Length: 88
View 1 (cartoon, helix red, strand yellow):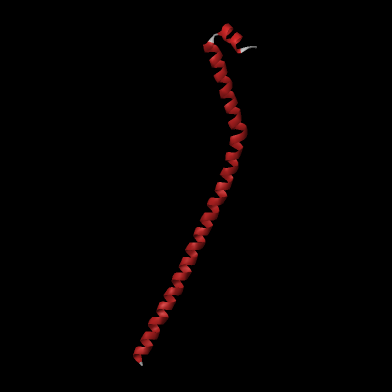
View 2 (cartoon, rainbow, N blue to C red):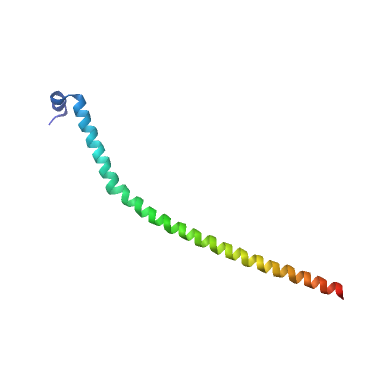
């Protein structure tokens, strides 16, 4: 059927509403079939990345604590050596 014949029979308003309804239906199907599965896949990947970042953060905290302990031991050894040198 020709667009002009549809316009002549139903009028512009009805034809425009039908066209917009089809457009909304098409967009809804596109989002439901193409976009939503990809968003779900990206959501799972994002959760994995967040977990890895948390693990790395915990590792960095542990490493910093170990470095602090080593530096404290080093400082204590230095102080002990200075005290021993002074006592001689």
